[in-house]
Image (cartoon, rainbow, N blue to C red):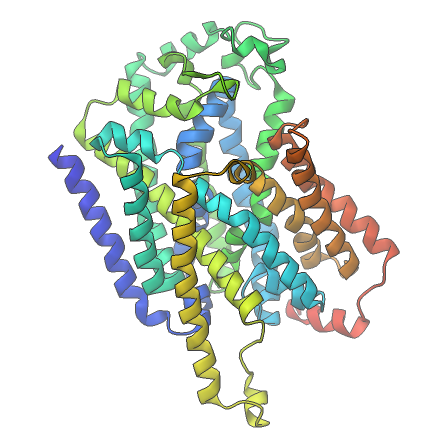
Length: 518
């Protein structure tokens, strides 16, 4: 027990120290929100990866999809690495950095408002982000209770409060720079932790070859057979290349991989990176990180059936998938050192994602709703519209408001996590699909195509949110994961078709925006 406590305490002390260390660089908005747009490739890549993979992935998704698809669930991790990281950095990285810096936009709603010369879009995007990021933030706590109960016998409520308090301290003190540095440290823990856990779990089953053979012999349970997922199941499917249902697996890959391209907290990492050379290095680092962490998580989850059947939830008519990974660890891991490492791994995964989400939420609320004005440019100061002293006061005021809102958002997320209302729980399930469905297509096409119109962006906002919420209100006739994937992919024809029949932006505006690439 002493080793587990010592590891956790050291981790927590380092986390708080980083916040204190980075506070000097968080005095103005650019410093607090974007790290002064001078964050290097290693910090940016790890910030992207650790925001991507929370304890929800390690405990929830890995257990759920590993149970459903067997070893083929590894494709989800591979998709996350190749589509969610590699292609995202290649396609979005450079253009996002150049255009957002040229437009002086600090958030995704700010980008929509400035790129398409419509502040209504900015307000609408910020409201969408607020509505769906808050439930998503509360969902980050999912998964830590079982593991901390296993490791320390600490009640779930205490885990949530401790994690929230520590995250609040370092984000409030150091802003994005503190978040990025801590993400790097937490990412290192995640890399070593997931590799160690995989080795121990497979050894518990006699090694990879024997574990693989057991998965070939595994069959669906009686409860499984009630699902259409296993209608055409054949023995060996849980160890096959594409699992029992390749089409269903593809939907999960699309949602969890392509979805990140439209999430404000993920795209924001490209705003802050130093330069184009850093983007190239960050691409490689981020992809390798995702391959190990995401690939490892889903690969590990793929062997979940070897550790017994999880508890069946009669009310929800599904398994308690969050129990699968903790059960595997409880059965296979008997080293205090490794259990301590797992505890720190889960804390790292959760805190990094929580920090990214609350920083994104507070900056969006402050800059896009409360203070929609830009900081005065040098030319405006010369013309006497506003002097440097006033501009500096405005910047400080914005940072103060963001810090206050970080506390507010974390308190709200803790409250929701401890007492989740039914509708909030439903929003958690569709938040990723709704955000990416609304934002992905107009953001990506807005970086590459001059023909995107303001009306098409409005149409995609309505499509993404409307489709996912309508599906939820109708009782999810379409599986929420498939619904999210449809919302994201469907946004592209919506933007393209509406752009072709609606009024274009003035040519002068388009030329002004496109100067960033010259």
